[in-house]
Length: 260
Image (cartoon, rainbow, N blue to C red):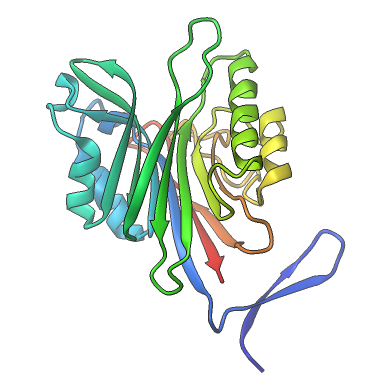
């Protein structure tokens, strides 16, 4: 018999995935707080050490600085790429401290192109964005779009709801193709309306009281997520929250995803 994984569903049947020709890709999402830890120290090398220890193929980063005085005028995405031997793309959303601030992607796979889209602002909120990166998978030459995003943090959900609807529309009309993995800091809990929407269009099996990512010193809720947005083609195998309470105010989340 060909080896495979079996998954038990909520209605008590088994879905068996043949992995003889599949590959497992590790995805990480990490809000790095511009490299500043809870100890007040800005040290991007500590972020790189965590990434190297867990060896993900894809990393979605949020709160990334590019050429700011507070972070030593370095390009944090490129520095992390050098320290982890990965490719990098930075997507600026706002100007701060003489430089840029936004999301980034690290990838072990070649980057074909990238696009940084702005999300709607409500009541003069901070400009947020969606960084979409087109990647070429090595074994199949298939194209995968990997998205890093960071939603509004305020208590009122209006901007997060509008951002979710924009992304849902973009995915629905095929702006990002068929094969999509979306990851990031969505600043809302698993029972929220926006996560329910993402679960309706993506595989959101990471929603659980087990995966608390914030605040890093004593996490009491999940606000960081990884979604496989082609149900049935990509299978989420497992998730794990990495216990690194000092390096950032968030804990990194990793997901192992089976690709065909």
